[in-house]
Length: 108
Image (cartoon, rainbow, N blue to C red; front, side, top):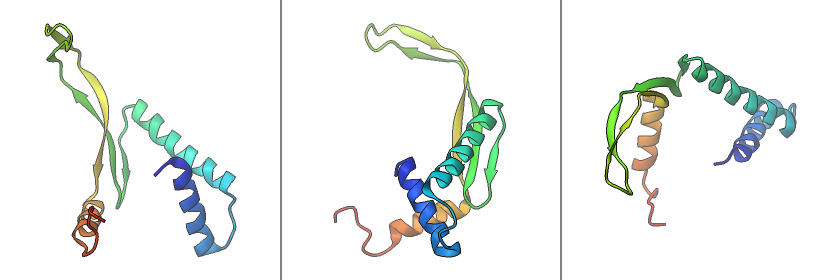
């Protein structure tokens, strides 16, 4: 799913529940604002918790030794912060139930 698909789906959901109150352009602004808020919070080393969905966090990777694939020489990779997403229990259950549903085979 792309961001455009997400905007389309959110606009349709709002139209179903409240009538056509919001344009796709306005909905795209809302989606962009949400994503920008997540990016800014992560940049500022803050966690974002969305109940029923999950948590966006910054995890600190330790310094480690790796290998240069071309030469095979060991290279030290510096410690750095990386963004991670931890899904909520509800989201994990929802995804697991979708996989277990009859007729939801990848062979179709």
